[in-house]
Image (tube, rainbow, N blue to C red; front, side, top):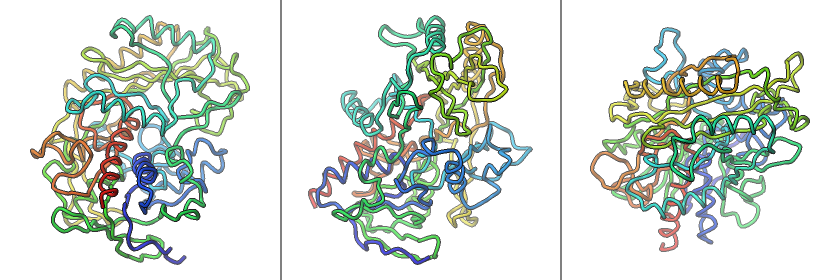
Length: 512
């Protein structure tokens, strides 16, 4: 394989091709007619349509694509037997470091994972896309400004609350959740159907949204054939950012299959790798603000499943709508939302109805899956430590996570357990899997490591436009930018902040 020829100079270099990097690229492309944009990602391109959600593929193609997403170190991948799949690394992801049997589950974030492919975690995610609420929202950004950005993000991700047709089983679950929890919310809020990034398809499962949804026409293989302003470079890793004073001048890239290194000059750079590798790249480049890698925020995750023998089956009203591709999510016929709310509801709940009719030998009764995410206490001591001597599988500074749960975090997880037990009892169901607090990192919703702040006071990495303090043209993106304690799935929130970053970048480029 030869090294592809890439432009030596661009207006915008985006590092990372997930939903956030794709949002920055798409918004700048649309806003600045002359902008030349290069998106670089260390992972391979899995599908002809860049960033296509793998849940939209048939099972054999999906499995092959997932295997190519699992990084360079086989010790951190789920493996053929799926031994790590349930609680640690889902297929398509790889652990930050190999699993040790004697490792405490809630200390050091042993289930921290990444995904190495075009589209990032956005080709694997569950497509859950509700808005942040109450104290999850930025306290230093005007509410109207954040709401406007969230509306744009919902459009980019094609968010809908009508992903699934109504079923008798879904109506039962929704009514039960309302009876249990609606009193905890202010008037006008309460449980409901979950906002999802997808396109509903009657008679079939939804077409799941991914970075390709955000990119639109730019996701197609021939996107560079038109005006030539946009390019995605797969298997192309950013080794180091190049800068002088307050200005980033470009980056040193490496084409991984050939080992060829080359510099690209850029008028602006947006690093949107993920909440682990974005601070890693800044640190490796010698950009090391005090808050870099600190305030690491996960969402403690409690999971259970319930069998309702005497309830209506999810499949009776929806039979024939399910195409089983080997993933339990293929059997989902409804997803419902128990929202976060201050002060008393510090968890965000997802409740799924499951149709087992395609499975041989399984009684097609109602199955309900529950996942609760908790808002964690944010502490500066929860952090990533970057090694000065050891390298990871990609030759970047090795990362060690310092992380633990507080008493308040554990109390909140206990409330999640009690909530799920109440749902099971109200449905008259039996637990197949009792509520369990999964290992730290299993949420995949890592935040805070390049956090946003209102002032350059050492407690944040970037300003309200996601521009790194002390730089004129360096931006960061992704869940790591979120500075608040959240329980909500963060993708929509992060894309909304990327919309604001793209507006700032566009204004800069138009003025160049």
